[in-house]
Length: 374
Image 1 (tube, rainbow, N blue to C red):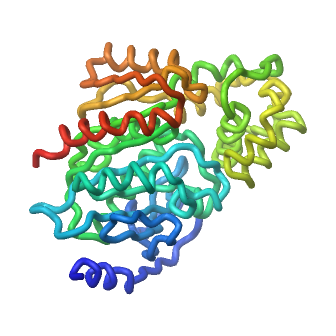
Image 2: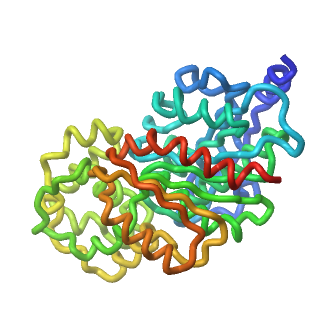
């Protein structure tokens, strides 16, 4: 009851900040982690065993400056331990880039019924980010690892500003797009947010080494025997089109390609895939992606840092994953190992989404190892 009363008081305070949309402002009200809205989470995304559930909108950093992101906080039941609840920052997988696809607004049963309840029972507060531009002004820069990592870091800052019972001790866990986010966060956060004690990062099915494929993309690319390839590729190109207009992304696209980008900008990824899966990447491209400026932008977005990691890492990979094939992750694991990362790797027999479920006992054990000692 006391917890409910405290959170009711928090919900009664909605901070309103008047600031320009998008990027490029020096307004101090747009400082990373500054909260602009607090509200109850919609009932469709409430977790049954959560002591409280809040939705936030806060300022973060996109590819070119300040942008807003949505986020969420789930708290365990009962009183916080000494020092506050440790935080597991959850980085979600691909949902699409249209605003109505935002993760904190749509029910995803695997997470609401399994992942989050297990984390809460373990005594961790769960903090989510939608990533900048997803449900907030601007276009979400899909698979832009640096901005996704900053969205995650700033979500933790925002959560701690709203709920003082949260510890400064945290770890990040992510699946798919969120796995990429977790690994970027692991490398960026210790320097970007020294006031927060990041203890480790766990990633399942993280897309990696995609930057090596960019120079191979051109009108000759056939349909590929993978899942949602066209929708994924179009989402990356749509993000580039919005955040780097000087690259003239439309100039690389056929009329069909421009139509595919329009589809992914208005539909969530599953619905978009149903509409565009029969169109190959080659049919989307009028010319090869050989321009050095475009390739440099793709590398900055996509290349997961493999050197300089200072916190323990966990990677889970499915052998039958057709979204993120195992050979790509094998290359990532090799690079991290050669760079001396503190790395645990577990391979699972299932596909992309099955790995998020099957890995949960191992990721929980990893989180206990890195988080439970103050």
